[in-house]
Length: 84
Image (tube, one colour):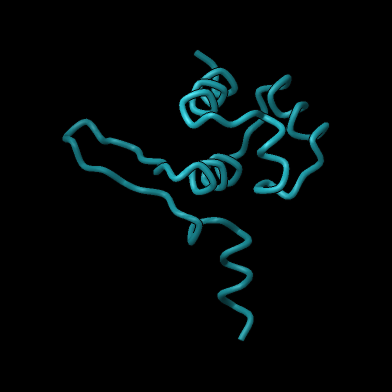
């Protein structure tokens, strides 16, 4: 299953529509539609989507260790933390 299809499934589970992601991704609705059409989501996009939907994005290693990604891992968060 593609990233776009899995993202659509997640949206269905949370009663959201693809257009609802425009604000959280800071993109136009058409740009979000293009991301779905082209299956072109960045890891930063996926982190933002999970945060917006109240989910966690995790990687599970072969030995069962979990690495969780959060908004702190996005470029936007990094820019804000360097600005004091």
